[in-house]
Image (cartoon, rainbow, N blue to C red; front, top):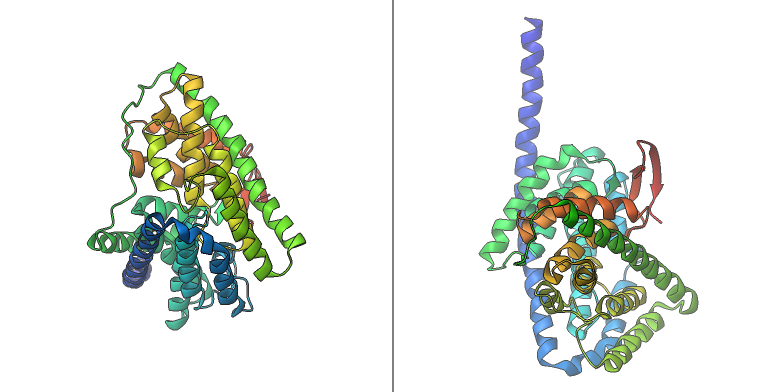
Length: 416
């Protein structure tokens, strides 16, 4: 009889938790789906506007001043690292973080800053989750889960990759440890947000890679060499981003002056290069790389443009630039290894992402959602090698490496 009562009591707790988190996840997914879709449409709109009116690039320094003034209203630092910290600790995420990053990212893309959208997605999603959790008075452990739930929802709405979004939210905070308690809530919120994004007419991110080679030891070695080279580029990119931020704050302490000068530098570099390929997200360049067309210098220039943009204080994120860098690098290096350039671009796309965010499982899922399952063994090799060989570098300084990448050892250290 005692055993029956215990089983009944435990079953009630699980049912109660299931109902609670399903309802919460649907609400978070609904809000995140709508805001994420509106965010996506806004960025696409201003990107099209800038493409049709190339003179807007000259207003980038002035746009930077608007962003600095907007963020000057806040006395706290607002970035993706704050969201990551909030999943592990009791760090708060102020409600005004969402509109600030929304407007800041739109301004950056309107005037041609070299940035992405995922930083904004994670920040807006985390903000939604945290503040909804405060309203319904969740305890501190549940707050961590609802923040990840919000991250998953908005990430999905903006990129159309719900499975990647779930695993990324669970994996990115503490490398080597996944918060499985958040798996169901993140899944539900992502799928709700995904459905809403489809209703908005937003197409999921996907590329058609035609020449996928069959699996063989020879091809596996070639992919492995490309992954090692991608890991080196990962380290260079992450160190450039961090060094750029350090130097900009050292020599230009005033945030208004820093973002204005950064805007001027981007304008100057754009004129010097004679192309707008490195402004904004550069999706058309990624698409070209997937078709086997990229210049040898594309990946290096994108690193420089992105480092200046982010260090100056413009908003958006570094993941889409990472896709750009990986795709163009893979495209130009692949033929040297006997790999089709389009397929090399796909490998670089995934390998760079894996190396800079330290999320191999999410990266493998990304390869499936974006490129299909025809070459999963190759992507698995690329993710495994890039994850290990990129060491403890990463884009998010608040990210924790909980377990060593080369041995079964607890290390609990921040990324470099």
